Amino acid sequence: MSRTVLWWGRFDPDYSRNRILRQAFADLGWRVLDFRPHLSMLADWQAALHRLPKVDLVWLPCFRQRDLAAARRWSRRHGLPLIADPLISAYDKQVFERGKFAAGSTRAERLRAWEGRLLRSADLLIADTPAHAEFFAQTFAVAPNKIRVIHVGAEAALFQATPLPAYDGKRPLEALFFGSFIGLQGPETIVEAARCYQGPPVRWVLLGDGPLKAECQRRAQGLANVAFEPWLAYVQLPARIAQADIVLGVFGTSAKAGRVIPNKVFQALACGRPVVTREGAGYPPELQSDGGIVRLPPADPAALAQAVAKLADQAATMSELGRQARVSYERYFGERVIADELAAVLAAVTCQN
Image (cartoon, rainbow, N blue to C red; front, side, top):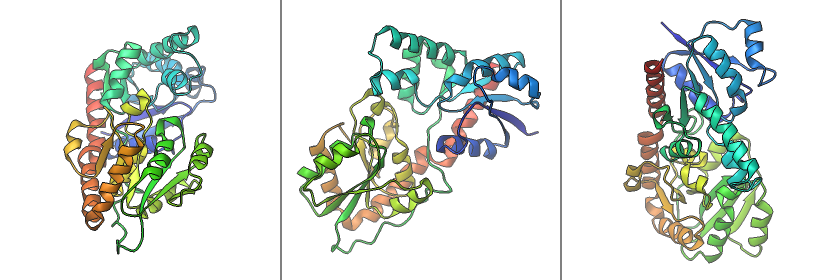
């Protein structure tokens, strides 16, 4: 008999993480219902007034820590397990990424205590990498046995492997970065790498918009091998990736940049494009020996320039590198992998309740 999961909160159903997991639930035979309340803190009262249908599980999607308290009250009242998938930490973002509150300050500690209480209230907590799971355990005192990992992956219907552009030796190869130009991504490193680059002709393209774009444009003045492109609609992104030969990931120095695997890495590998990105503890250890991805120290323009030059020297075999990228994606992050990880989470919460 089909089981039903209730997705709770003021979440965006079209956000890629949510769409991937909703599809995984469907693939596992679960029915997905949504409850999107008017007010987060009073959501359990609204749910009681609306008499929600019978469900088997409550799921709190990413970024919705504010919805956790009401979801916890309602799920306990009905004897239902609650799984939270925060994806990022509000404390980490405000203190270490944005620098809004100083680490150790009263306001920072208050935020950490608030978020910790909420995260510990879930029956299971989802992290996107083992390194992020360790962060949740150490920072918020969440019991490690209450944390499970489901990788982010890429939307299979959109990000499909396509042949690399034919290389005739007459055009420069294209190294593509796409993003929101934030510190975690380290786009300045890309511009500086283009400045010191020595190797076969490469066109470095930075696509998107964000806080650091103006600084990157200033640094790129006078560089004929660097181009900037405006942000594209999400559905147009796979076609733009298909035009590139190499995709550039993130190169920031923050602890968070070392814990996560960015969306762009999953998407590029899924499209069959070799990726160059910073090293990080979030990657499966076995991926180091597999093809399709090159990982470097963060904020190291010289290392990035050398890595791109090495790939450009292999232009004749770029299609094989692309094939290896797709194989690595399927092995570690593909649709079947995500569904299996979700199935393990559902089995674990069933055992606990």
